[in-house]
Length: 596
Image 1 (spheres, rainbow, N blue to C red):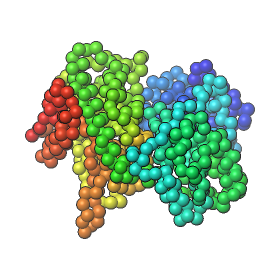
Image 2: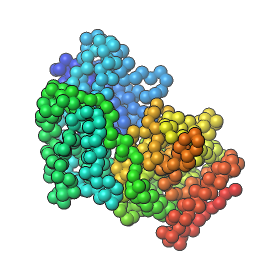
Image 3: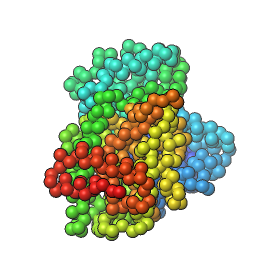
Image 4: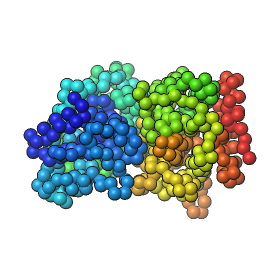
């Protein structure tokens, strides 16, 4: 059945339930950004497989809303599907709720699966539709899943592994005690954990249920003196179970719903994070008699502030990752001359150079290798059909990262294959200037990423250039490559940065049908100084890999930027040289040559 057939079958089910519209988001019952194959219902219905997007189907129309990272990809994948692309945050493009209100009439009903809508998301959509007199109906037996039927992939069965305190720096017992202390302060009886990375962090466990994300599918209920972890029990070996304190009781994943009912009958007040707890879970608790405390959970903030052990591990794994990248880039310089590589083969190579490194687990996301015009597709993913030969004459953008037992990496480098044009050098230098300006900025404690984002964009704005994605995202400690609660972005995320946060610094520029440029380092937020005005923070580069000096127009750099580049390259040389073979060492010395 093609996309049009799937949408029509969905409409048939909608008519049976008296629904005028149906919403299929990207999320799963854990409100994940990246989801296991069994929950990729939006991709199944629409044919668009980007990580972010929402499909809305009415009885005669259908639309997909996604952000600028996926505009080009969505245009290509939706072609001929009958689903219209709506580009989020583009002037004149209606938001999903407004479009629905314009298409439907007062008294109509819109359906959605309450498991895959958070409390906040459900209520936001409900309130927007109510302004037009349209109702939002929770459909427990998801219609998109019914269309999928027997073809739906099964639940993943990968074994869970323990994450040693050697890498975590804090025991499970300590973390549970922290949660219980927060419960006592809030006057709550229990806390619901739904987000997979929060559960993995709290229980010092890791899995492989979601590609590139070392998490496992689970729920948890933490009470005072009692903790329930709901997971496929066949995935928990005795050695792993033995790492958990006695207070933790393992229960089947499917028992979570009944446990909510039981908790609702016993507990007076249950703490649920409205951003990560499903509408279904809250409704179940309330119907069983509990009151729900809607408040951001404590785990995201704790998880985002890396402890001393995690910071030491991050520095160590970035040295190993830097060695892999240096070997890869030295190889790339030789390989392009032979004219036998493609985007796909280069992607395999960048993974191969990492795979042999100590403590390597896997890649942290699907590598982006975009040559020429493909580099302008922010989240481009080469396929056998789209992969092109990589030759001298344009720019190559490589965005990749790895999961190690002791950390997570994410790096983007753009390199010139052959002699770059003046336009390319001017744009690259502007991106680099923004990257450097953000990287050397000192800021008072309490500053958020929304306030800092403009620094990375200013050199581009001066040339009338811009980029549509955020400048920085949080990164987990041997966990998800994207994590909150903060970001560096034009979106109004007001969560302040804190010492111990690890995040990306990745401005870019993308010329449609031409080339793409992005420069990305992971950085650690550190204390810089304490003055009479308070505590000031700044960034320490964790990523160790040279910039492409062949793309830098040194005439556009100020002396401070020249010194910053030279200092960074000296660090890269010192950290990596002794781990490289002689030919690789020579390449690195050339790549890190001093400029003036």
